[in-house]
Length: 285
Image (spheres, rainbow, N blue to C red):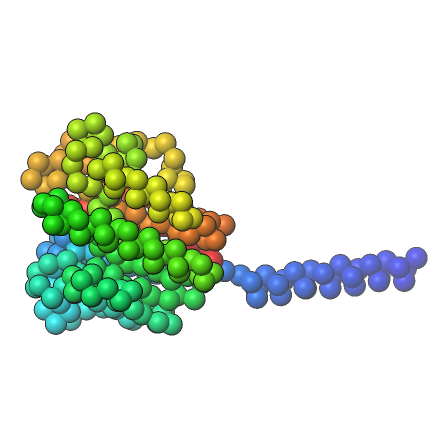
C-alpha cells in the first residue's frame, strides 16, 4: 500500500513538472498594438505625442498621415521610444505617409505589394512579426472628386485581391490604420445623410463587407458589438468633436486565425492631438 502511494505521488509530481515545463515553453506574450492617424507627426508632437506613447507603451505603434519624410523630423521623432522605425513617405512633401515603430526587429519589411501608384503616396508598410504580418495602411480619401474616388475604389479592390492571396498561403494578418471607410450605420453619427458622403458610400460599405468575408475580424466590434456613439474621427472644420458628431474609420482588424488570441480592443477617444484618436488592440500570442 505504501509503495502504491509513493508511485502515485511520483506520477503526480511528474505530471505537474511536465505541465510546468509546458507552461514555460508555450507561455505567450501580450502584444499591444496602437494605431493613430496623427494628422502630421510634427504637429502632434507639439500636442503631447511623446507623453501619450510613454503612458501607453504599446509594443507596436503605427501612425498614419505623418505628413513628413524622416529627414524632416527631429531625432526624437525618428524612432520615438522604440528600437526600430520604418517610414513610408509620399513623394509629395507634407502629404500622407505612414510609420511603424517596434522594439523587436521584424523579420521582413515591405512598402506595398508592387503597385507604384500606392507606394509613391506613402500608404503602406507590411512587417513580418513572426505569428502575423502587420499591414499599416493609410487608405485613400475619395472625397475630392471622381479621380480620387476611382483611385480609392481601385485601391480597395487591389487590397482585397492581395490579402486573399496572402491568406491563401496560411499567413495570419493584422490590418491597422485609417480605413477612410465607416462600415455600419452604428459607426457614424448620421447614417442617412452621410450615405451620400465619401467614406460611407454604399459601395465602400460593400467593400468592407467583402473584406470581412475574407475572414477579417473588426476587433473593436468583436468586444463591443452594440456600443454606439464610439468614433475615431471628427471634422475639425465643424468642431464636431465637441458634440461627438463623429465617424469610426480607424480600425485594427485581424484574420480569423488570430481570433483565439484576442484579449481586448478599444477606442482611446479621450486622447487629443489630432482630428483622429488612437485605437488599440491586445493579443495574447
